[in-house]
Length: 498
Image (cartoon, rainbow, N blue to C red; front, side, top):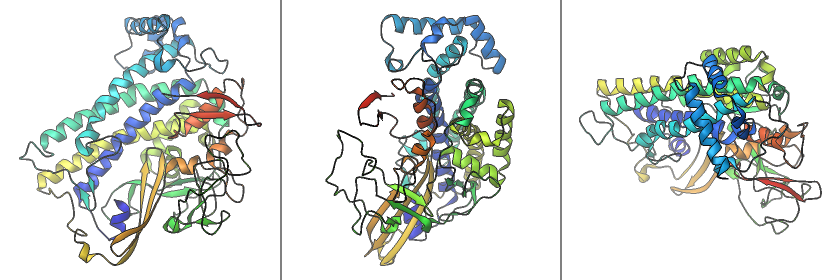
């Protein structure tokens, strides 16, 4: 939407901006909690070890870090019995494919039992809070109510079929539930787990360059710089300076990708001139070996000013921190103090985990603010949800180009399009996992995943949980199937994560 609105110079109404902020905000909160408990926690938490836990000690541990009500001895004993029944029946389900008992696990049994309990609680919690996304966007994660110039969901205080005072009240309740769980369960768990793995503040540093497009506009202008989470670039881990983002410096290589450019694979192209041509005839999936000297990835290699960039919650929080975002700085400084580490610890696997938690907290705190602003507009009689600009194709320019920036939960997402004869001639998008998971480029520069794995200690190559910790810390879209191969191309193991 933003790319088209930019091309046609459309300004959206205030209510549309607020609804978009709410949809994105609750998606951040739900998505990050799901990632921590259901996609990443099991890299740090030994589920089966929880069977050895003393429920009374688990209760004491839980009550020492939070006043969350579900923390009695009886509660944790019930969770433990449920887990024991699963193990005895051989029905571990999503807990089946893991490395239980691996020497890299460091949490005591009581902490593992607490994490198992909260894993199960988070399943129910996320199902409820995402109802806000369903109400405003109709579908999660791909909302269906966006239209060029605004939103399609109506606002009418006098209609039961539109957003009204009752809708706002319902969503306010969901926002309160979301924030309570984040404050009393997610953040305490994150700090508790991280305290046992402080050495991971020294691993997974990656490329050291961070890109954030910024998100949550404070005004309605296309591609505005007035954002609640600021736009910017951090280079070489230097937090003393935030560089401006120039979209024209973004290009993509296909040197090591299973694609071909019409003018050769050593060049890079700006997305406005981008090509996605699958003409490669060499080894390809399913492949018998991994040829890292040739083409080895379905991903292109995005670069900013010819530099690899990391995107995602860590990039957003670093840019916000270095830009002086008051609340982000307060929370990050508090987390660093509680863990007893300095800002340099952010540039790591552990830093990504912590940054995602910080972003979840500050976003959950902000959602009620946007809800209040939407309610205030309704009280004033401002019910507009889309602009009439740009709806008549006869008024469109014969030629136009536009781009739109968005920060998805996993990072910087950009769309570029060219319009000719009032039709889209070319469209390209550069998505977060393409930035982070990119192969090497024509200059042999590694992408963030590859760079972050250098120097990672692996206790058992047959059970490389340490590799998973760093790769999963990026929250990759391809996390459902990670393949590990030895230098000869033999597949060592395959890990599937539910």
